[in-house]
Image (cartoon, rainbow, N blue to C red; front, side, top):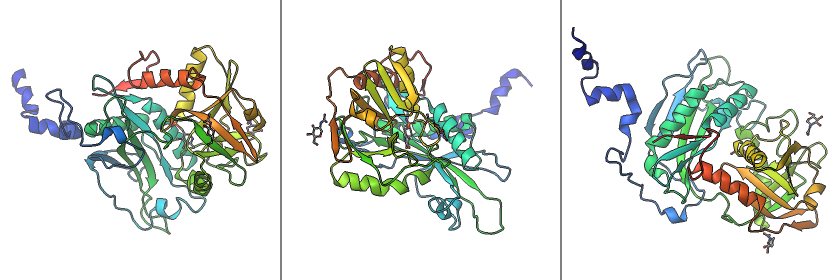
Length: 378
Ligand SMILES: *Cc1c(COP(=O)(O)O)cnc(C)c1O
Ligand SMILES: *[C@@H]1O[C@H](CO)[C@@H](O)[C@H](O)[C@H]1NC(C)=O
Ligand SMILES: *[C@@H]1O[C@H](CO)[C@@H](O)[C@H](O)[C@H]1NC(C)=O
């Protein structure tokens, strides 16, 4: 058989679609180089959920390995009433749900960038280990995130108007009551275009220091992105919001004196040339943004300290800011502790503004990425 005939392995475009699966199902199509945008009011995006075209699902087989994930149209998922995530996800010592949050950014030239999705994959692996769940490999996780971003490309907001928030979930989806089939786990990813996380937009945050409720305790699962970490503090958040605060800053549950973090972001203090943040000691979520900001701050000549920070130190900090994928780098304008309120002057050339510009610049391809943090996927 002549070598020419080997092309018959892929005799047509249709067969190619079996090999490259989802890639050819892409909506909008970029064949003509023009990206069709979904019909969304991009100037008024908030942080609400908006369904997109595709989601990704991968189940683990009985031997605990994940394989054959696939994209499908976005829609409801089916779960057994005895699924681990429904029965023990929020109520007992069985913690069977993890989530992640990462974003796709649109460059000015229309191409898409992901920011350090491997770090989210590593964190999910740590969480799965902590909660005794099997987990997709780093490559499986990153490939799936890429697939979801590309399949929903028309939902990635124009450059500067927002981002596509990508939400990977890992849950115990098999029945767990009594003897039966081996438990099943599902890895699922969906995405939604988002704008600013806080209704304040980019205005400084007004934080309330919570003394009654704690987010995490020593030996617990506060250091991983477990779904169980959020329900217990919803009450504290609701109470603070009803009193006009943007969010809650939690203290450690042992001494009730050391800063931990805000509900969904990490916290930093600036004093002179020193930037400090609470050491991640099992009760603090190790944010990808936190790690990135620590590295950028070091590169820009700041002395960065990860250590125990008492609440008293807030009182004479020059500047305070929060970090997270959803919030970016958000300046704090006021913090209320007991009956005291500290106000931080927001300068035009603040440290948080400087760090925010560099980080956003890298994420959106405006600044050269010398660290290999971004992945271009279009
Ligand atoms: C997700 C999260 C963060 C921020 O982590 P990033 O990786 O920077 O997005 C911080 N604290 C909590 C509690 C979180 O859930
Ligand atoms: C970390 O936790 C241990 C106890 O689990 C404690 O002894 C230590 O001081 C903590 N370190 C920091 C920096 O908070
Ligand atoms: C602090 O809060 C007060 C009252 O909400 C507000 O008027 C002020 O602008 C805030 N300060 C900063 C720096 O955000």
